[in-house]
Image (tube, rainbow, N blue to C red):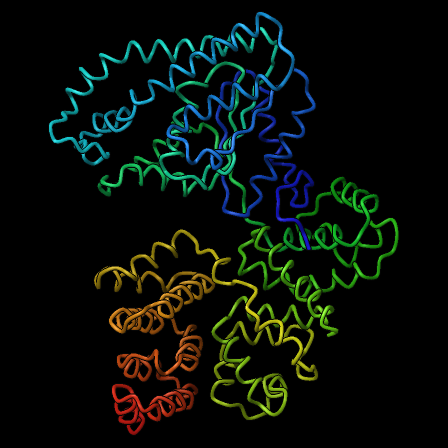
Amino acid sequence: MWNDNETSEDLIDFQYLKDSINGIIEQDHLLPSTIGVFGDWGSGKSSLIKMIEDEHQKKTDQLIIKFNGWLFEGYEDAKVALLETLIEEIIKARKWDKKAVKYISRLVDRVKWLKAASHIGKNALGAYLAVQTGMPLENFGILNNNFDSNDYVEKEIEEKEEQADKGIRGFHKDFSTLIEEAKLNRVIVIIDDLDRCTPSTVISTLEAIKLFLFVEKTVFIIAADERLINYAVKSKFPNLPSSDYDVSQDYLEKLIQIPVRIPALNQIEYETYINLLFAKKTLDNRLFNGLLTKISTADKDPYTSKLNSDNLDTVLDAPCESLKEDILLTKLLNPLLVQVLRGNPRQCKRFLNMLSMRIDMSKAKGIDLKKTVLAKLMLSEYFKPELFQSLVKEIGTSDHNIFMDLEDQKRELSPMLKTFKNDEWTNRWLDVEPKLAKEDLTGYLYFIRSKILNIKQSKRLTKEAKSILIDLLEKDLLSKAAVKKSIVLPEEDKTGILEELIDRYHQAEDNKIRSKLSGVISSFVKENINLHNEYLAFLNNLPVSSVVSSMIPQLVGVSNDPELSLLKKEILTKWSASGIKSIAKPAELKLLKL
């Protein structure tokens, strides 16, 4: 098993990103500055931040302050919480002389004042945006009907502006003087997990940076998912109309000057990452650190993974047969795994952790499982859950290993297995070693069917796919347009959308919602022919009690492919024998016409 926390060990080759951020921090003319480290959940943001933190922690003329916005979720004003944390960390950082203590005391007093006066600026940002855009205050969450934006800006703010500005200027001055008195060359404030916070905490924290803390020799590093920060701004002001002018993006760009985006790992980088995870688990610290040093200082070849079966003996100081076996396993996993996980390191680690856990569980039960066989089955579970469930069902009811039929091109297949053979991904998966026709799969299915691996929650759609999914679930016109737009999506996005729709169908509690979802699913699948197999697998696995009558014509009309007609008949036959009047009779009539 691998720890899922952030680490300063660079297994992802973040050196170039770390050097870029350090280059900004070390240049006086670029400070004060805010750096946004942007990336999806699990992309390695926190680990990159920790690498930077560890490097600067060693420098005596630099002060590192960490702030986790998520821990202050319950505070009324996150701005004040950030300032209090800043001062607390300054006090703990070192022993201060009398002159520095004087300014620290003044900062403490100013935070107390700001805490008492925090209500002053609650409507300030909304009023500012109202004036800048010419939109009503209601669009920005200011709901007082007697509240006039011009009056607010000209009178209300003017009355308080002098007092608030005086407090902010005073904090700036005292903070800046403290930095000089303490002979600090840099103050680096790290803000992590901001994208876990509520929109109000996100906005409040970003405002604090710009309003109170943006002084000479300071740099703020903010790790977050850029999309969620944008969402926070839009959620803060939900009545903003749609337009070409993106207020949220403009607001974010004003607060974060330098964005550093973490890219998804490609297939070569993913192979290196997986192999290093195996090496970390297998080798002792001395051997692993030596291996990491060798591959990090080796010649950079962008077309070859840094650790693979070809160079293992060269970079490893002592032979290790178990690691060789794991690296061979990577060759099986990597080409398919990198597609569904979109190069995400954390998702990869979780998949491998589940694989490792199942191997350990099997040993505890006295069952010997081969890693390669289990991993191959888990890949189908992960990539094609609806088809996988059908496969498990076939294995459970067949009197022989059905992979003998699937892997042999000459054998006659059942309608369900034909749907597998018509699927491009499934054929690629079947071709991957090891072949399963001669394997006894009983023990493997015992552990896989436990459903420990929560596939649905771990998958993430792209921004475009999420937008289409939202439109699919909206009114008819939006849904129809979304179906057309979905045609150009990558296949993994289409599969992900179908899984989300099917999840919603399973969770629906009444037939009215099921009927609507059934229509959405069938129209989506009809336009995306590569999903026909999974759609029929979904219908075949669906308990008859959960079938709605509208599914019967949808099943018949989804495809004209003669290869699928046998499976359609099989499903209709099952439905017609259900004894449920609203399902049985229509299914029987359609069956006669096929």
